[in-house]
Image 1 (tube, rainbow, N blue to C red):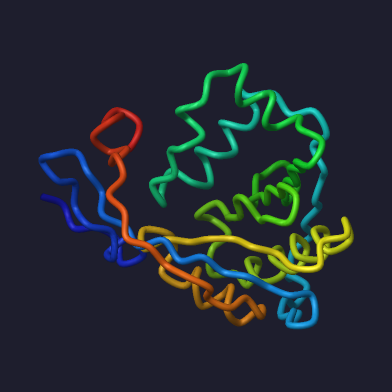
Image 2: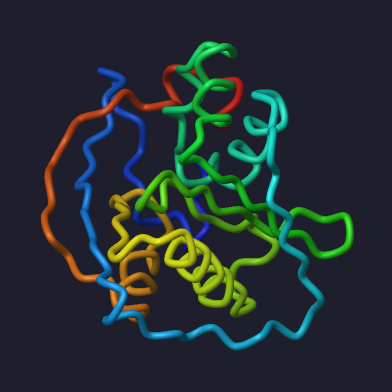
Length: 190
């Protein structure tokens, strides 16, 4: 067995039954509690609002950002269902790039930050808090008076702390056993 890099040491090894035990933490941010933390990164990052993303385009982003954190739920959607979700009136997808390189993205749905993350090359460069500020700013600009999001125990080990420093507070948690994508798609989640 190979050693996992320290960034992923908190993730449990795959189980024989194909299940993945996680604790999901639910958070909430009233507008008045938002603490802007992000310092403008030392690199030029542009953010584009992708107005009519295709399922193929989206899944590429989703995999490039989320695969290390074992994201898989959106892979379960049919192309038609995913396209409908992505193009729903309350949905927005914003993609951050440094030149032509993908930095990360955030996905808003009504008052929820549905997905937020960076590619591995941009983690640890103080881009995360800045991009999170952009996501929060955009969500509040749409008229939300409070935002919700969740994270879980296989996400980046500093995700919960990053959200709390922005002003999010924990409003609940739950333990669940999910399908482990490493056993569902071993050729993809190596």
